[in-house]
Amino acid sequence: CTTVSDLTLAAPLVLPERGAVRVQLHVEAPDGQGHRTVALYSRAEDAPEDGPWTAHATGTLSPPEDEAAPPADPRLQVWPPAGGEPLDLTDLYPRLAEQGLGYGPTFQGLTEAFRVGSAVYGRVVLPASVSETAGDYGIHPALLDAALHTLTAVGLASVDTPAGEVMLPFAWSDVTLHATGAAELRVCLEVSEATAMGETTVVLSVADASGGPVATVGGLQVRQATMAQVRAAAQPTTRDLYRVAWQPVMLSDSPMSADGWAVVGAGDLAGSLGLEAWTDVPALLAALEAGEEPPERLIVDVTVGPGDVSDLPATVLEATASHLETLQALLADSRLASTSLVWVTSAAVGTGPMDAAADLVHAPLWGLIRSARSEHADRVLRLVDLGAADVSTTDVSSVLSADTEPELAWRYGVALAGRLRDAAGDSLQVPSEEAWRLDLPERGSLQHLRG
Image (cartoon, rainbow, N blue to C red; front, side, top):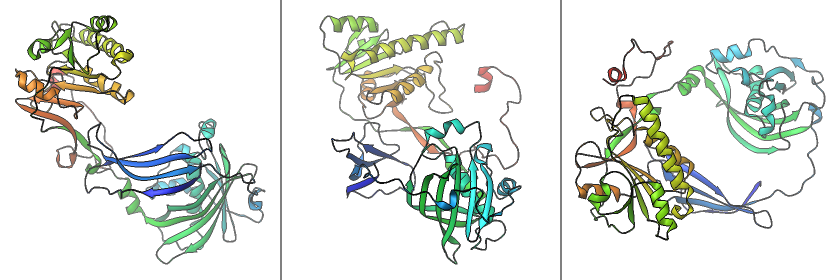
């Protein structure tokens, strides 16, 4: 599909001063005429997993009309181009690296370049190590990027590029892809417009190794950039560093109703909450087989202590394997497809420097459920940790009822939820441009490292 029609704007998409926004493009299956409904949505990154999405635009994608194959560009039928003045590419990539544009071997694909009047020609080839993947793309990203290196090779004859500056692509327009899967390209670039502000627009014609048309670009706007600008854009800063911070959240005061709730496990939650319970998943499945209605919400009680941990690695492995079996059994039974699953642990997750995870045996369960959540986006898979301190029945009811939070920890009368926090104000420092490495100055036990 290449044409968008019936485009309707429902609401503007505004980026906040801080934080991030998730953008979702939804494309439906084609109808009988090949048309697809398309919609654009957004939601704050820290919004609840089941929170609403805001619709910004809707439209219809239509299939392209049958068109005759585009004529081949006669300038790219013969290689090297007739009357072409070869350009020296010997130090092209070292020079780009000095200006802050370091390209790895896969992206160093420009092998030849010529100048013919105001036009510039380039030949780009994918390395043998990745050439077999060319068919996975319209145009392989490394191949397309290398085609634009021709701009740097010539310095754009019609624009006086100052020393220490490079031309970088800024905006594309009128782009048409005619063929896919090429591992070698011939490209012709011509300047169509240049301004005194350092902006230049070029027209591109791209062909394959035999001169067959691959793509045309009606206008590529490029801008001059200094080495300082390039390095500043590539240099990581603390604004891109985040950490998880457990922060207090407000919970509903509404009491938890026992209706629709049930428990699986050997802990004490069922007794304290007055809920129906089964000792394990097989017992639950047997009850369902006997005709009992599946619960709306099922608590998997993992609050029982780990017991003997004299061989901690073996105990962790055994417990995690058992949790995996439980998870797979619950997800595989179609009768539980609409049941919300809530795993409850005790001190299996740390919420801060003064609150480390004490139950290392059940701590991996959190990672297991998080992975399962990403694979089963249609299921409600929650995690709740009650901490090592005694928790009242009222508090347990409150934290279990908070369906809008996928993960919660209860600590000393406060509900905590994990939130991404900008690490700019933390003591974590970004390494300088000098060589550095991560290192441990001395060997030590797990307890020593935690301390």
